[in-house]
Length: 175
Length: 112
Length: 145
Image (cartoon, rainbow over all chains, first blue to last red; front, side, top):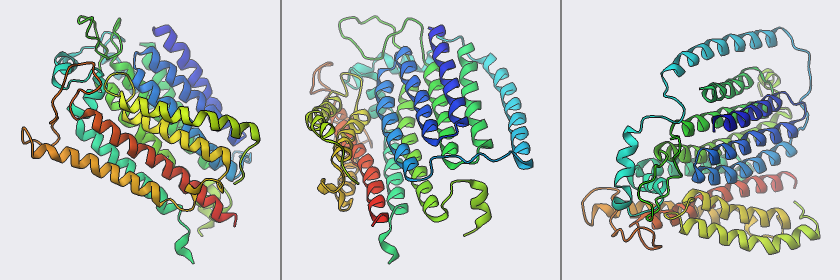
């Protein structure tokens, strides 16, 4: 299981490196799709079918919106010679990445082994869930019954984002 | 533990893209890559070896289930990520209509 | 924006109805099989987006302005909030409790309030994504006039 997920992660990393270095913006958007669809395979290997269904349809809608925006504006990223500010940016980025990687390495020593995590909280959720909520799907029971406030907050965020999109893309008031 | 390290490397690739790229669409793509790495890390924490998907089968009451709590968190986060990306894309369309370029250096210099 | 060629139009005519029906199935069986409100809502929105992309925006009457989908979305989330508030009145006086009887595990009508939540959150998510898409199309139309 670890080997399979590692192979797909390496493919996703290669796709991500290509996506940020592509000269053509349409190629970059399609390479972002590699990362998204590779994530679907990882979710299926990690026994999470709910997440796989949601991720595959959301990734398709995201790609449609990104392609619509890219085809409506420029398609090329003009290549300019890297000047002084670009070198400062790249060196700052390398320093920050080295520091964060060092601390993440230290922190991952205190994680449990992959696949043998402690299930202290999960036992309380799994034990009587199907009698308390009555649903066979545990994830739906957790979303709507045990942690219903989070779902309400998420629906609010979605409505607010749609309100923002309508306000930004409105032309009628400018006459 | 190499899976966890590869997940962190994906996060850092996205971070590198946000700091060093000049094009606005590339910045949004790098943000999206960072979000994907966090979803994968959360889903990997709840994995139990030999477990099955968290759908209760009344015929076999003694199976081991994978942890359903991180999956609920990631389900919420995926839809919020879609809303954020859609809103950033609409801002990019307006910026392009006004400034006719997508380079952040030139937009800062124009000061329309 | 113009529609696509004849092959795409005919294929879309055959497929869009099946995708819509599959989305409704995923929403309704959210408490028995993987899926639920969010996945099913996005699938339903996907079938409408497929129709709009294949036939062009001047064919679908949806694209004059986007008030229809906005009203649907807000009404759906308001109804979900009313169902949550109804927990204050009935049964154990707690906000957000599961106040319908939980039947036997594995039947279609079971699990209390959860199927109702699935339906209304599904309608809300579908209307949200359709509103985002229609706002993009209407913006493009008004710019090219």
